[in-house]
Length: 155
Figure (cartoon, rainbow, N blue to C red):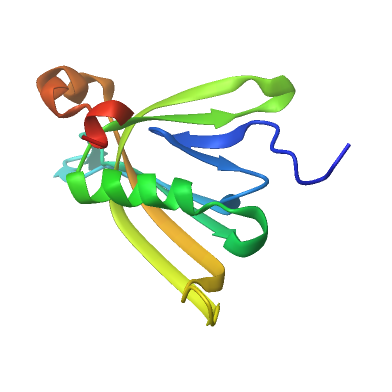
């Protein structure tokens, strides 16, 4: 069995598949916050739960495009980002079980290319950082018209 045979996506952002061979995720960073404003009362302070802020997920991935490819996934991620599309986010878990995280939008996209190849001008190492915002399910019904499939995105 060859080590360069892809065996499924680790993370799927819409139609962009982040795999071990290709655009490979290296680091995930999750952040979320909730608010607890304090109100002075006679007995001290009363803390009120007012709700959660947005959930953010940052994915850092890299590829060596001349060896393992991966620029197709980057092109899809860039198209999703530029069109401000809302797409599903799925993450692989143990025993090939996929976790449907929900719908997300790509808030930030940073790309670094190192050591440009002399024949095609593409970096020999391409690092991508994708900043996602995960939308609550209640927001999906209000903005269902902005959810795109891959075929709609590539038109």
